[in-house]
Length: 354
Image (cartoon, rainbow, N blue to C red):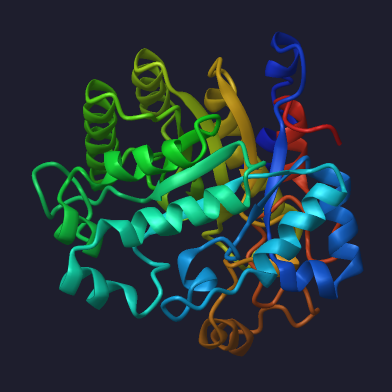
């Protein structure tokens, strides 16, 4: 009952403090836009921004060295343009989206022009994109004193590779707003405390060195298995971000559930309440440029349960009535594209125009 009560009393907060709603967007995939008219219509109804979920990543663009594949990226970009939606540029460098040829090539050549070539190619081709995640997830804990994630970029070009990537993106498009996007910053856990600390120190170094960074992306993959978000920790972190003169984007908001066997209405209320707790703090940040979810509907969510876990639940008698087997209910719309308390939390905090 507590979760349901919390979700039904979402505070009608920050819209009254702003001259306009906080822009709302979602990650989207070309294959679903082309195949599913209902999904496509929902994107157009709810979103003012679209984030290409995979289409802008290097492994999709240049799967073989010197052989480029822009079709899917152009499709989602043109879809957004043709319908008056903004594209959010995600992402230029990420250790998990490197084409298979890249690591060996960089280790053999130490050729930074390979990286600047990719950055310039993407920023130039999609010149209308205002915001770019230049480096995705550069921080990891437990490896180095500076908190940087081990990667081929770090191995080949040293800790300055992040500043160098920002400079390359700025050179290709001086008018763009450049960000670093990071996850795991929301909970009162040792690993997340450490990640917040190292991320802030990285940002301080970049600012001190004159790197052209304008803001940060908060991925905000919330997780009910971790307990409630730490509003105090998030608030303290954002104060330091404000002091650095950086703006903020919420880039990949979703919720992983902890209990998959409650009735759907209770599960949705718990998800909505966690989103509200998070937005209570983040939407109070003066220079919040937008909120995006990592997917709009549970129909196409990366948070689905693995098949073996679905089967285990079924063997214990759950979901015999056909409700939600295998679906994590952590996005604004359900699998039938119906709004849930998640969407109510966005509305109550002045996010989007629904």
